[in-house]
Length: 158
Image 1 (spheres, rainbow, N blue to C red):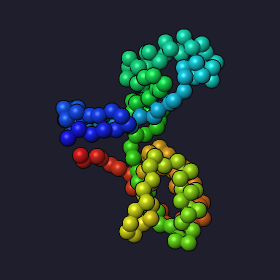
Image 2: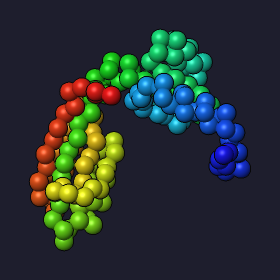
Image 3: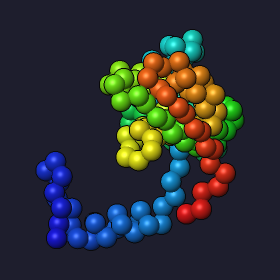
Image 4: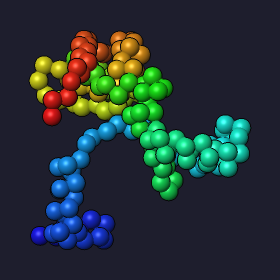
């Protein structure tokens, strides 16, 4: 059965191709920039051509991926910058009567992703290890956060 999204109808073969790509794919972390090269060059005080030359070398050495309107920093680039791509998860309990305000503040604390969950905790935050200390400091000062418990990923098994 073909699936339609925003006017584009996928064929069964296209769906099979997407599934195969997904099954054989590897999840990677990137940081995406949506700014024109002209604007970036201006921000850096260099010419657009100079920036373009540097970007080409970075792309050829797998530090970035580029496309129309975006630049992605790869895990390799993040590593050079000291930005770990190792995840940490922070489990948080929040006082029920302060949840609404606390959730809004937690959203601003710098997590990669936030999950509202059932069980003994209220929120799980996914944070890169390099930002964990800053995240915990910010969250510890939020009114309503009762308890935090952080776990750093040692190894991804699957």
